[in-house]
Image (cartoon, rainbow, N blue to C red; front, side, top):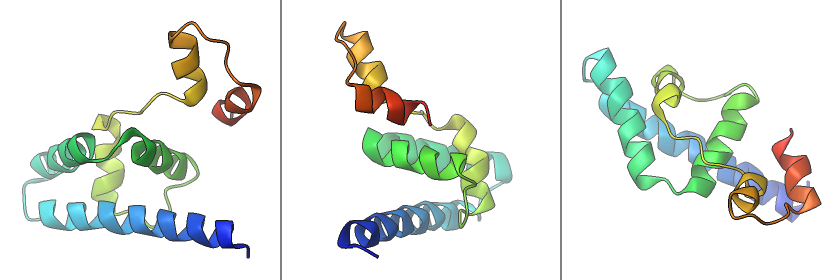
Amino acid sequence: MSHDEEHIMSTREKLVRMANQIAAFFHSRPREEGVAGVAEHINKFWEPRMRRQFFEMLDSGGEGFDELVVAASAKIKRPITSAEADLKLGLEAFPGDVTASQR
C-alpha cells in the first residue's frame, strides 16, 4: 500500500470515527432528535470537502457508520462537486473533475 493509500484510509477511518462519536452523543436522545442533532452538527462543523468524502463513503456502502449517522445523512447537505462549481461560475469544467463527478 502506498503512502497516499495509507493517508486516504486513515482519513476515511477518521471520518467514520468522528461521525460515530457524534452519533454516540445523540443516542441518549429520542430518535428523531438524535437524527436531527447528528445532521445539524455535521452541517455546521464539517467543511464541504469532509462532507463530500462522507457521501462518497456512504454511496459506496457506508461501511462502519453508526445507523444514526446513516439515518441523518438524508438531512446532511451534500456539497456540489468541483465540476458543478465550475459550471455554476460559467467556467468550463476540467475533464478530470467531470469524470470524478460521474462516478
